[in-house]
Length: 393
Ligand SMILES: Cc1ncc(COP(=O)(O)O)c(C=O)c1O
Image (tube, rainbow, N blue to C red):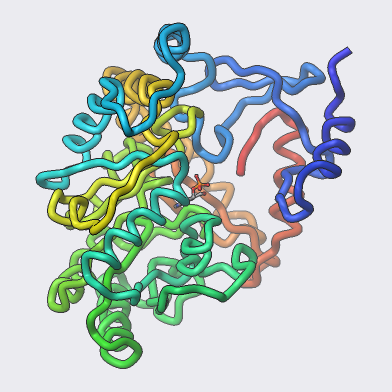
């Protein structure tokens, strides 16, 4: 008899840290997946809108990706960056070209946190400054450096850091002091705030500003299109680098664009990616202009980064995304979802708004007819969708 959901929950709680968040009053354990569906160990089937935190991007058991991984597994699992490896090199060439960053070089990591760590090391080293700007309501990962640039009380276990971080106003309009302004005035107010923070709270020689084009963990908070254009103009006046954390917004998910930054008429100096690229295989990375990427003054390696298993999965996955125009699918399906959800949102007093782009859509639950966040209702909603066979985040 396979273990039940309950039994695995009990063993998980005993063997793993108490601070690991688990979904659902009765957490589930996935046994297998196919297409967009997963089955738990008790045989319950779910339509999966969540993809293991937005990571099973093209679906479960996609034959082209399974075959690529199986063929590679029969050859060699692992080599390290101390040897050249064709899958890693081909992937770097391809992602460099897709990134839109001129003269791009790519460094591979195993997660989004590690990718942002590497981006911060590059930016602070290149600029010889430990001063970093991030956006309020941001989430960039769980490592020591990323906790320092994350602006969420519930995801901030420590304030200790070697970085000197200031948080500027960003795109979370529902709770912004500038939220009532129209798009242009809102952007202008945030740009003024950025200028003031640089002038009053730093010594001017800031290394970088890191941003998510749409804030993921922050509830898909979406700034007006073009928002980061005037923000980057201010950064450029000071030589401050722009890092676009595309861990959630990359690979066409927003429908309109392949990368989230493209909605803003900017090109970042550094881009980070992870999650969906390996369709579940551990894979992340940083893209930067060669001048920045090559600026590290010491040796570095990665034991697992760019390993052949993850690289062939990512190559097959990206090929699938491009060949099947999944960006176009995000646009069409996102619009369909939005069209059906919007009337419901409009007439529901405990939903504040529907926001996001493409297949990156969120609703925010509030106490009825107020702006007060209501996490308990969000949890209830999750329980109900699960009961009805739908997984959301
Ligand atoms: C925007 C963003 N950046 C970075 C991360 C960290 O990625 P990982 O969990 O792979 O370390 C996340 C994870 O949710 C994320 O949403």
